[in-house]
Image (tube, rainbow, N blue to C red; front, side, top):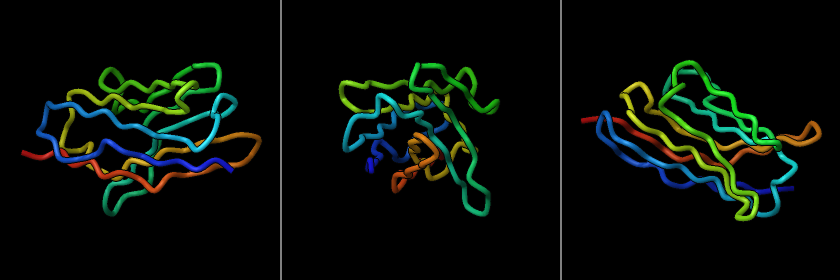
Length: 114
C-alpha cells in the first residue's frame, strides 16, 4: 500500500502563498490524487483533485487561487496556494485513490493570519 507524506505547511499572512507537497512511497501513476482540509470544529472538505489522466477539479472556494498538479516521475502531488485567506486555515491532507482503496497522509497545518 502506498504511503503519503505531506510537507510545506506553515504560517503565512493573508494574501500570501504556500506550496504543499505530498510525497508517495511508490508509483502513483495509476492513482487519482486529492487534497482535503479540515478546520477546527468543521468536517473535512475536498479542496482539489487530479485524476490519473491529469483532469483537475476544485472546490468553489479555492477556484482561481489554488492549483493542483502531479509529477509521476517524482511520485509527488503539489498544491500551489495563492491569495491565501484566514478561512483557508486548516490541516491539509493528501489522498490517494485506486480501485476502491483510499490512503491518507498525516496532514500538514496551514495557518493564515496576520
